[in-house]
Length: 135
Image (cartoon, rainbow, N blue to C red; front, top):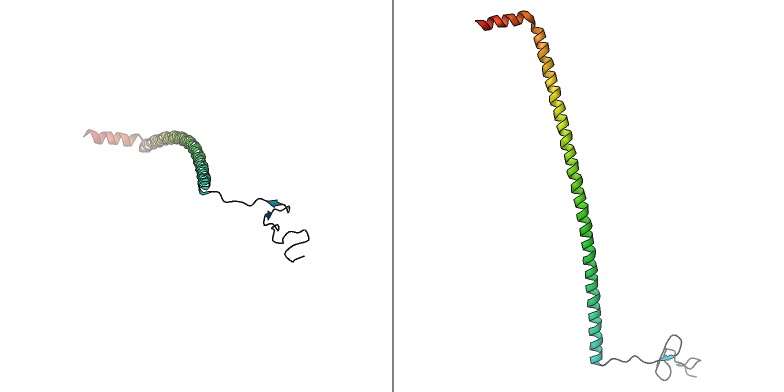
């Protein structure tokens, strides 16, 4: 027995002595033959077309996802704008309440100051102002 053959009669490099390729099970399989150029061109064209179709489908899925995201963002922006508008209305109402309360308080303080000023001047000062004013 030569060193090139194992005990089962096959070569050590995975080829049967008749030259055919052995698969994992140790049985022979037909050798892969090269397609003729026309068949190979058709096969490659079909593979390119399939890849192009997959790319187009992926782009369509991406566009659909982007449209969904855009729609969701527009809804979110619209809701945010509505909330901001509501907050602005509440803020303006609160400012008006504070302004009205402040004006009322200022009017009350001025009225109180006038009353005190009138009370401090007394009737003699009022009479002397009237007498000076008659001249």
